[in-house]
Every structure is written in C-alpha cells, then in structure tokens.
Length: 334
Image (tube, rainbow, N blue to C red):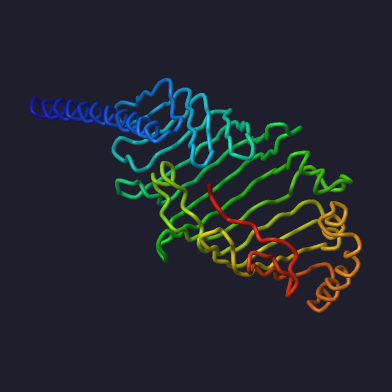
C-alpha cells in the first residue's frame, strides 16, 4: 500500500507539473501570436488572457478581443472568446463565441447576435495546425448590417468541413440554415410585392473545394487560401412556391474568374421569371420572348413546371446557351 501510495503521489505531482508547464506554454504561445500580429501592423488587442481547467483541460479565455488586418480590411471585435482543449489531446479544440460580436469588411460592418455559437475543430499533428475537420453551429443567429432596418436571421445554422484525402488541399463542405429569414431590405428587392413568406423553407449546400493552399494557421495570419476547383454536388433553396436546385463543376483562375457549367433546376419557373421582371433584373420587353423560349425548353423536358437551365461560365461571363446574360462573380476570399 505504501508503494502504491507513493506511485500515486508521484504521478499526481508529475501531472500537475505537466499541466502547469502546458498552461504556461499555451498562454505564452497566444501572447506571442498577438505580439507578432502587432509587429506586422495589425490591430491585435486583448485586455486579459487566462488559462484554467486543471487537471484535464486547457481552457483559455480572451477578454475584450480586437483584431484587424490592414491588408484585407477585415476586423473582428468581441467581449470575449474561449478555446477549450483536453490537456492530453491538444489538437482537438472547442471554440466558443459570445452572444454579441462585430465583424467589419471594406464594404460594410455587421453586428452578429446568437444564443449559442461554437465550433469543434480537429487539426493534424503539425506545427502549422492544418485543418482536418470542423463543425460550427449557431442558434438564433442574426446578422445586422450597419444602416439596415432589419437583420438576416436563422433559427439554426450548421457548417461542416472535412479534409479530403483524394487531392491536396481539398475539403468537403456542408451548409444548412433552418428558419432562414432574409433582411427586409433584401426581401423588398427580391419580392417588391410581398408575395413570398418571410422565411425560407430550406437552404443548404454540399460541395467539395480544392484550394491553392491548406487551411492552417497561415490562413489567419498570412492569407486566405483561394478556391481553384469547385464541385457543387447540390445547393437547394425553397422559398414559398419557388424552388431552386443547382449542381455542377468549375475551375477558378488566379483572378477569381470561374470557368465551367452549373445546371439550375427551377420549379414554378414562371413565378421566378415574374419576380425577376418585377425587380428589374430582366427587362420587361425581353420577358415575353424569354418566357416563350424557356417554355419550349420545359415542354421538351417533359414537365412544363420544371426547367433545367445549363449556365456556362466562360470568359468572365455567365451564358445561357450561347447568349451572355451577365458578368460571372469573382470568387476571391479576402
């Protein structure tokens, strides 16, 4: 018994020393990271940084966090931010955000509110902490753009990311928003006559993206990896009588210009066309001819209420068949 007690005491003492050294190392690493960002010209401030959780956890709380990257113009402020990790499994962390925070971009500022926003993140065993998988959830999320009359809301939001082994820097992403309600200003632009409900019935996406670099610590402190190939398995939106689905593949060049083809399946497409005319997205004088052409396409497909629309992405333009209908979006992550 005396020998067993001695072993237990020594083990407990060794573990206590390990936790003390580990927690000190965690604080030092985070403080060094903030100092390095400031030396690069960032705004990187925190009023307090503390690690607790003895004996099995490293639970770090940052108080009054303020980060701003001068190169991209992105900034984030929060009253606190927490990172929880098991002391014997430091590559798996839980991140917790406060109920209120602010994000600023070069284009606008946004106030975020939520009841519970957190993420589970697992990294690979490397000094740059490359992402292996991530799951982010948020409850009762609202995003209010500065100057807007009403926020965009979602009852629940889930984002899942998993590294794929089939290609370097390839990640599968899944997104789902339940009870998604667009901001009033946006709804008025899309539906000026108020014919659609306030909330979408469904909004989700499943895709695989190949990037030009891995998502690791450098993605925060240096530059965001940029998409180079996108395989959209399915994106779906249902809003009242309107239903859209999209699938396809595209490549993205260094300027962010996509090349490829996306097929849009539109149910009740005449209602969608009517909305596009009412909002001015399609000139009223062109609507009749366009409806006749789309009607012929839907009849040939065998279902007059459903329309499969192949959209080509070439030369910086979006094309319906050989006809350009607008500029292609630039896919660049700031």
